[in-house]
Length: 409
Ligand SMILES: [Zn+2]
Image 1 (cartoon, rainbow, N blue to C red):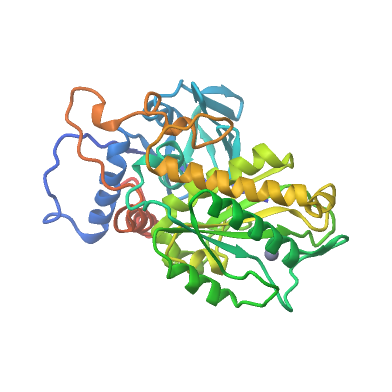
Image 2 (spheres, helix red, strand yellow):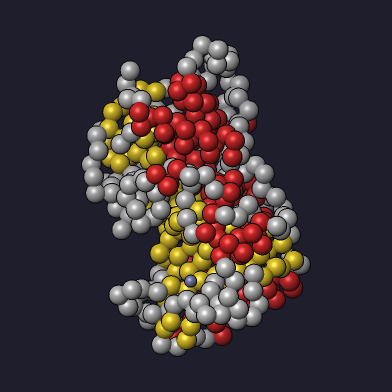
């Protein structure tokens, strides 16, 4: 799962983008080129020059360039493995894998890491959609201050969810939500719940309820089940960006290019997933199964930032026994509070020190590269990272056009 088994060819696409010369070129360029230029322009603020390599018809950049841009130490490679780091920050990964550890927290990348010509490469999509919002959450545009938290207890009524030896998922999720509601209210948040009793609420209704809230974020609480029995660990889902396969798929399908309301919140989604997931990894003591991507209805059809957590396996041990305890449920509720607090601080650019949280060091202004201050050469104003009109559309459109436009000419 999550490993790419193909070994597609790469072509060094020599695409280098000098910063100088910001002349409007749209009058000269055909549409496809315009899209590519828009994409390059978006990548530009990340560094003066990115050496872009085409792999599997996608744009990749070297881990070395990522390190340079984020002012981390140059990669330490061991075979197919790499690690880049700076005080309090690190990214570790391995070629032919879709998993990375960012500040000790596991993520499933949009596309696999490759090793080519002595360099380890990571997709431009992953730099934009995962690394950037995690490393610099304070740069996320449009991130509204959090006043309301929407809590969604998974399942309910005739829909029991997963059943384990100690009970049903619908009861455990409701108990966690009611505990989290109290904690959040005690800390000054407004809380809206999709359900507070054992009732069945259609998924569409949950999503439309969430989308009506202002200055809000959405947390859906679930527990896992393995069809083969057993299973252990926690995982957190956020919406797969447009043009990105869900975590259990290895190739793209037509539906992966559909635009959903949740795509307007891609950077917030990953930032929120990071803070809540990191809190759970730190507090719950179960295996870290990672921050993953999916297109569940409740996270794709909402207009507010949202995530779905899976707080352990109803069907496995030691999870099931722990989930049955008030102590464990209270811990999850506290993780939701902590994650919400950290998210709120992170997007506000406030410094928070505590490890291991992928967001923490990123919010330390002393350790974060500030593109506005880099070098003496004038740099263009960074475009709004995360704005749906820029990053979202351009990355995907550039990728789509690359499917039909062969690189290298
Ligand atoms: Zn569930």
